Image (cartoon, rainbow, N blue to C red):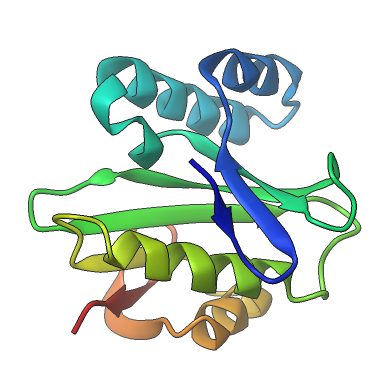
Length: 154
């Protein structure tokens, strides 16, 4: 499985790579989130792409990972939530907007997916702008992390 955008290769990493990611993560919150993703992959191997960590690799410099994202499973209502982050030194280049555009369009073409949502914290203006540039709209609702944005097939 590989999704390509203009400058990026987007691909899910293996369970072993996820284990390495968890082991090497120094931020407890991210370590826990990656652990939950791995557990989702183990519990739902037939739907692994909806739980795995996906890397964002530069096409022009293979092996250079600029960030990652993940889906948080597919809800019974056809909603998938996406979480994302860039590695230090890669912000401000449009990589996340490009990745979210490509992956949300791909997700909405998959069977049973009707909406992609993302939450960000209220004070994270950069993340809100990325979501808006990628075609997400503010839903008027707030989740655990803050405002919820969405993109749908309608």
